[in-house]
Amino acid sequence: RVSDQAALSCRRLQPTLAMADPQLLAALDLMRRMPPSRCETSLEELVDLVPHLTDDLLNTIDQPLQTAKDAQGNAYLLCDYNRDGDSYRSPWTNEYDPPLSDGVLPSPKLRAMETLANDIFEGYREMYYEGGISSVYFWDLDESSFAACVLVKKDAEEKKKLEAGNWDAIHVVEVRPLGPKRAAYKLTTTIMLRIKTGHAVGVHEGEMNLSGSLTRQKEEELAVGDVASHVANMGRMVEEMENRMRDTLQSIYFGKTKSVVNGLYQSGGAEANKKKDMLAQALMAEMGKRNAD
Image (cartoon, rainbow, N blue to C red; front, side, top):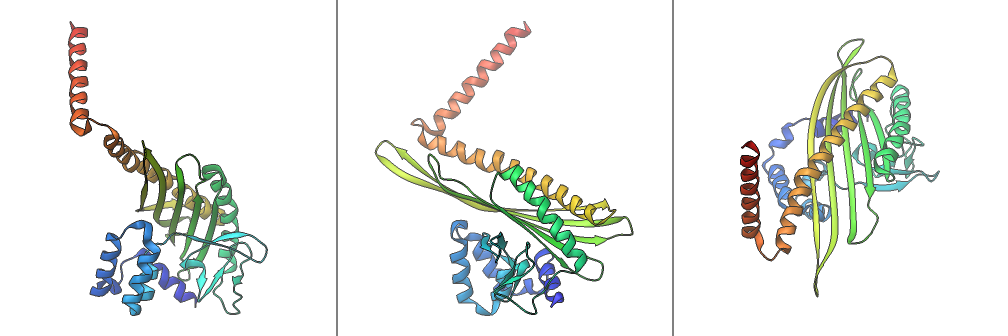
């Protein structure tokens, strides 16, 4: 059963021969062309069309994170990495719900790291997100290597024109030792973002849906001391990756969308904006000449 977890990780982190299946490639290409806002519905319909590819599709296509509560009332996030059959393991109690007598559990060493990582990333989530839910799961890849998945979900509060919104972050880290004091880390991060806002111009009302996903990878070789150093290294990589991807979303995607939307609301349109920009550049150039004189 542990080998099943390792195989799952390899499917998510590395290309496999299964990807050569023309039907699977066509299905993934179709999913990329579907609206991200209806990802779950599109995936269900795709599974109905090609049921023999169900496992490959579910393991390859990222979906918005779902939440659950364990027997002690602790909230946690659901994903493929804490699933065994139809049951999901809580990172707080290390028990499956519904109960599973032979469910896959991390080794004692990994469980100690998992417990530490959940406590640390809970503080990270509160500091950066001021709410939401986080979960961290560890599993063995082989005798010396292991992997971890860091999940963060934050739903936005409805205010002003914001009707709905959520942020789902999935960080998968593969760790392979390079010696007694060094290890190679491979981080694969996927950010899924959804925003729904209302707009009104005069008597006309409408809404805007902005949704999509962004995936990035990073590899590093870092020094390792005790067990806690693995968690510290992964935390540093996750923090840097999230900050970089957040800046990219803010400056490129949101900035461009804001520019386009503002252009739609202006009566002059793009041509008028172009003339304003040219006039501003001409004035700046003239002022520069006068200052030089």
